[in-house]
Image (cartoon, rainbow, N blue to C red; front, top):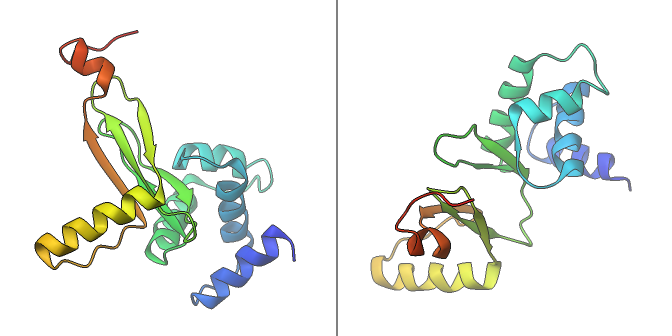
Length: 148
């Protein structure tokens, strides 16, 4: 089964009607990897579907996020970014609010944090995607001033 067929099957399983726009947008997010802004998804998807408009991309990424197929990633002062959700590889991001450096926290570390917080609060965490902002080691050394 091809990547496109697996993604279409996942959309149907979540009650989505599989359209050319949705398929191409989801495939674009999956194939480009990493975290992409809606504008980047739009620009890349238009290569395959020239009539696509930006509003459709925004509506589609919002509905795909609501359906749990993609994750949103927000860094202050930056546009929202999206990535394909991989339930087998949950992860979190540590984002430096000064220089914008992003560090990824892997699943085992995230699960340990989830257990500690659950023990402390009895709160069941949905940890598909977590972003924490702060200062990276370099910016801490420079007193929070942006470095080059």
